[in-house]
Length: 447
Ligand code: HEM
Image 1: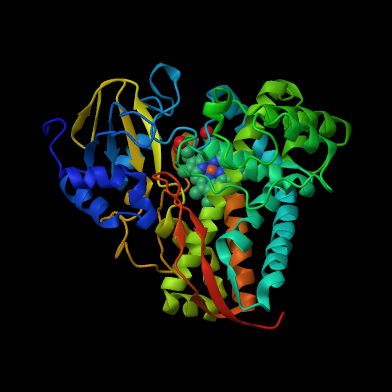
Image 2: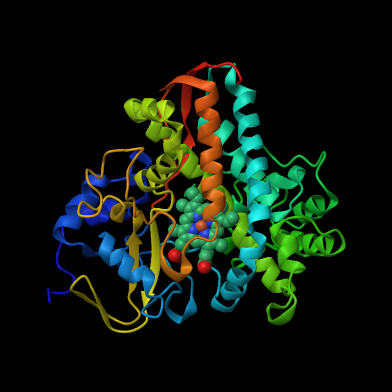
């Protein structure tokens, strides 16, 4: 067994931890060096902005070790010590507690059943097409802000059964859930426009009135600072939506959760409904937006692969998987050791935290040939972008559907894609996101 806490070049572990690094780009070189030298590396948690230093954690960088940690929640809990949220990565990937998760997983097959999925798939394809058509003739746009931001909101509204006019709320909640702190740590995207009460429902207006910092304060602190992790406006909206769905059932996930029930699954109690609504409302937006923008960047940086995809649309499914691998919209996931154990030859003590670096595992040389290459036909492609094991992503169908719909529409209407300026990235060591991605193209006539 190797010695614990082997000294690594300070700069590499500091580099992968610092959120400032990611403003310039993912530190692939530092990650690759660490994978080669200390694949389970101790990372000091230095103070960031207004946050004090943390206790540190083990960065798990190789694919095999990542699989081991993610597949074994009995050894590596998604919860932090004393059931607190995990420090690194806290609040930024959705957390569903075990009883709710198994009920959710039992109900989801119905909510995501063939009929619902087919129905959503058609709607999502139409929405993607409309977003692309709306800008096609302009020949240039900010892909991240003007195109990629809208599709996840519209799709989440469709999935959840939230009226389209209220989708600003989804963007606001997503932003506040993912935002890390009040002082100069702009992790979230922030809604592009302030809340516009015209056209939205009474439920939305009442929710906005319950917002701790009022309707127009996009600089308000995140929920942890606002109200101990609560979003009172989201809870109010979720309660009212649940009541609405009981009276007016629709063909959506929230109707399925409040109404479909029967037998041992029972209807979702209000609090559980609110928790699930929070998870879905927050999960479904920013991460998909990051995935879409990352996919577009992959096409821009790899014109030969884009041409290959144009020539053979049968590659769209594998191209989407490759975008997820190449970009890894969620860069890392936090866990806590439940007992003394070993990861990749390194002894880990009960209570110590681990951070599984998906963005590193997805470029691990023994698993992916030429891992830095973007290959739209890559097969097999055992990427971990959507997690693994009992807590793997519950939105995988929806993610893939949105990405296929968006890039299908883009290839239909945008020829000769090229960058039209520098992308502006999120300052986050968890979400691989792009705030602005200026692109240019030659319009193709609608088919
Ligand atoms: C590109 C988009 C997305 C990516 C990359 C992604 C990635 C992930 C990952 C890595 C996890 C595992 C978290 C962990 O193990 O700690 C996760 C969990 C989850 N995801 Fe996603 N996700 C995406 C979109 C979505 C969407 C659209 C939804 C909902 C419609 C969703 C719902 C969830 C839920 C509910 C969980 C928690 C599952 C549980 O705790 O059992 N995700 N996601």
